[in-house]
Length: 130
Image 1 (cartoon, helix red, strand yellow):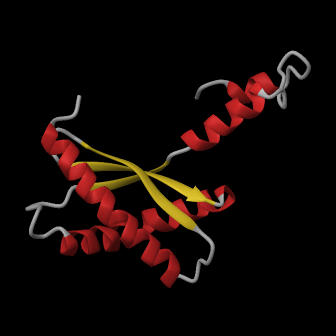
Image 2 (cartoon, rainbow, N blue to C red):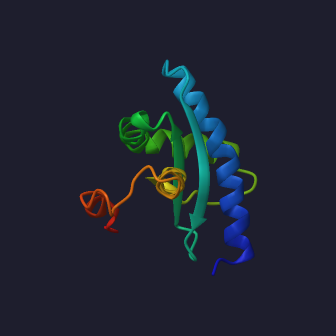
């Protein structure tokens, strides 16, 4: 369970990360791409922040995630500038794709009868948790 301090730092980072990432995407010439930070969880010792991103359109997600990871040093620096009065030390940033919206969408489609594993047993292989 997260402490109040972890939650506060996570919320602070989440708020600033949205601006930093969206500005970077716009500056990089990516029009029509929406990057939202769905969750930031900070470790107990406040050394690592796991950042979960939702990227729309979804087909751009993997390519964008690679770009974000390769620029994590610049992103961390930009965040440190923005939070220097609130945080003494900036945690290491780790980025992940939050696919919960896609997962929910798949469940809804299945419930509406779009993907029926009884009619099409091949669907079951895709649903196994990794």
